[in-house]
Image 1 (cartoon, rainbow, N blue to C red):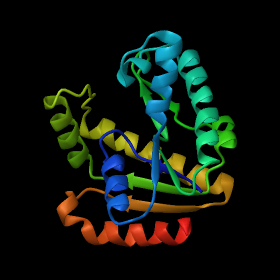
Image 2 (image 1 turned 135 degrees about the vertical axis):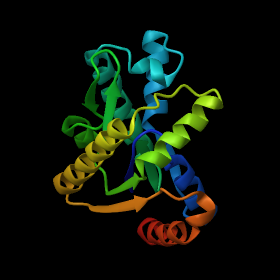
Image 3 (image 1 turned 135 degrees about the horizontal axis):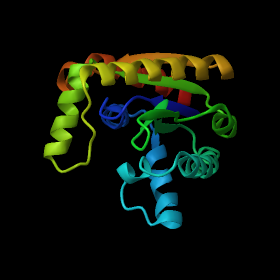
Length: 196
């Protein structure tokens, strides 16, 4: 089963997935960005994920397409794979958005379930600022920019669920982990059943 785990940068998708695994959900996390970075390193000599956003859109698209093929091959071998990705990706050269998983890419991936992690814009900005202080390259953004990105993620998630006729789960990840344990436990139970 391939689950698209969607959400904007710093919404906390990786943390949620790690907590689900801590509760025995048996998930293999695959980051679309990491697979794209592997390909970008091979083809362009790129050193980090933020540099991908500075490439021309055509090159970003080519890298994304190649990553889809690698990821589908991984998902075919595993029981429950979460693809940690974005519905839309902010591009720096033109200050525009590219679809993270346009139809031609999603048709290769063929998701079985969509999980959308969301959080309050203020929580996301706070996380991005912490990441930046910790040395991770991050665009911080304004409340308005983060709100626009969250809206784009929601549109992408709804589109993907409708296109593939699969379930969509919205997950509010605004709270810190220690205050969100009940919601995480319920989500873990759902994926244990689905991955069964």
